[in-house]
Image 1 (cartoon, rainbow, N blue to C red):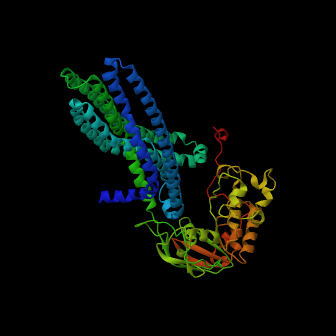
Image 2: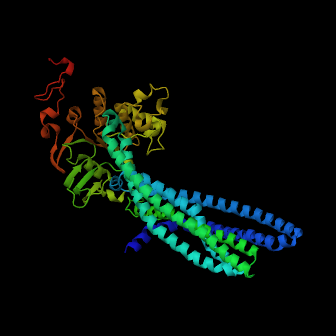
Amino acid sequence: MADSKQKEQRAWIWTVIRPLMPMYREVIISSLFINILALAVPVFTMQVYDRVIFTAGLTTLQGLGIGMMVALGFDFFLRQTRSRIMQRAALRIDVNVGQKIFNKVMALPLSELEGKQAAFWHALFRDVDTVRNTLSGPSALLLVDLPFALLFLGLIIVIAAPVAWVQAIILPTFVFLAWRSATDLGASAAAEKESGYGRDVMLAELIAGRTTVKALALDDDLRPLWESKQAETIKKSVQRGAKADTYQNWGAELATFSTVAMTTVGALAIIDLSLTMGALISANMLTGRILGPFNQLVGSWRNFSSYLAALERLGDVLAMPQERQAVTIKLDRPHGEITLDQVSYNYGPGTPKVLDAVRLHIEPGKLIAIVGANGSGKTTLMKVVQGLYKPTSGRVLLDGADINQFTRREMASWVGYVPQDAFLFSTTIRDNIIKGHPEATDADIVAAAKLSGLHAFVIDYPDGYGTNIGEGGRTLSGGLRQRLTITRALLGDPPILILDEPSSNLDRDGEQELVGTLKSLAVDHTVIVISHSPSLLSSCDLVLVMQRGRVVRSGRPDDVLPPQMLTRPLVATPLPGWRCPRRRSQRQP
């Protein structure tokens, strides 16, 4: 059962290899002639020792030398040709596999992407590098050269039959050593990979939370954890390296023993006049050509083990269910009517329901607010409405049509989304705005920026919309990042707008501008906000109150919300019993 599963996980690679078969055939043909030409050196050596030296045949030496120069030139040409073919194969593999994995990752549902840590997805593209290097690097050439060992063994039998039986014993020993190294190093390489993955996960978290780490001076708290994971990674690496060195050393000793055994047996054969000195030297040279690839194979099993593990991981990802990529018929732009029919959602089997049989109908042309305590299911509900999460049970309808029939691109063009945590790319303001709408004109960009209030700030910059905002928009204030994400959601005029705490980083004036913008948009759009802003809540047409995954109340703000949620205090009031602690230097002795 396990073997059949592994075969299924690795079967996808044949869709990549099959178009490259003409290239690989050229490589095999080139390797055939390269290995045939490799016979020239032992034959040349045997002829020099047996015919030239003892007979002083300078003319023969001259002819042999000219022939060898031609053979070496042809050998160089073939090797160069083979290298260029492998480079083209590497490029094709890199493009095909990389594109296949990128497209697959982009097509996966959000729940699948969130189900694994960021380090897992980073590691996928290192696996792509592993596949490329194995199929187009020294490992691939090693496998091509291995069968030619039989050719060299056959020549030893022809020119030095008395010593050929030594190789008949040594060669199976090398095969056994290679097999043992594959079994042993495969498990060690997997353990090393696993420990390295745990370290990479922590490193990704440190980088993502570097502001918090620095602000709270967490280095002393995190250092023991980092040292523990790093020590475990080093330990596994040392263990794997020690085993690999052991097998390589055994291979080297076996190769040396082969030379000693060949020379000893050959010397006895020369004394017995059944073998010439040139034949013995040539046989030793051919032995090196035979055992060289097998010795490399002993040390290369880590690469092959990593390759097989990479195929399985990539195969698992390629087998994941993905979102719909094409539609049977293209529908018109929806009006924005949303219906939830007994929608439930939980993050996995056996986990509590985050949404519990939610029934909801939202007419277009409304400004709706969703409120509730943390963990009540507000954000999850909005992700289900967008189609980012597929309901565990129930249906979501858009203008009466089940959203499961729509592609992610269609849903993204119909639903503008402003997340609570603004995510921006390390590029210009303009490039961030048009993400998802590359066809947008300058007039479209400026119109959306004016609606969000971004335009008034951007025109003050020396580079205007061409200003680079740095990683994650770090050169912008929180309010401007918020306005930029709102601008991006407004671009393309989607019939539905969903905003998660859109005023959290805005000042009083910015919040009032946003309220006015949303009220004007709600005339012919469906606008849904998750917010606890009193001014925004009091301006809504409908408020939905969520509790434990259910909509427990709905109606006009004055009817469903307590008065304190609809008024903004002018002066902050300290919590009961709270006192501002005096500095140590101010305390009385």
